[in-house]
Length: 237
Image (tube, rainbow, N blue to C red):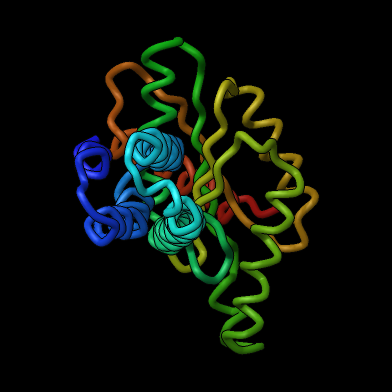
């Protein structure tokens, strides 16, 4: 708005161009610090105001310059949006498997627990720990272990819903968020996933309660997992 007013009041071409060249920098700023919808809408609005302001000056021949700067500004905007999205993805994702990491899990879990509190729908959390993963690394090397983890996550993605969340929180430890899923339905899902998996693993479940924090919810799932491990060791399949 201020820049558009300056363009409207500008007395010469140099001053008008100097005001217009600010827009690519503004596009970069908006793309980096604001959400895409806000950044794109604000940038479009700025150019709409500047075009209207330019029409009221005696320098309408500068519309070619304005058009070039508009293209440059939107390029800077989209580049900044892409780089910011890529940075956010790297911050929230496990580089090996592409699943969420602890930071990403915390963000997704906060969103799902807010939905539980707001809508009252169930949220069940599954904790997964691979059986004998250290043996795979020791016998076949860490590349084989890495391939095992990547394959596991790929198979889980193929078998789960788009709304389900997979996170790797440790070497061979994973968490799955199952929104709108009761404990009984979640147990059925986990049994199916484990039966289809080429890698043996043990799972534990916990369903969110109104008093839960992220720590208490994940802690219950973890305790259930290790209780199942203990029972399987006492009475193996």
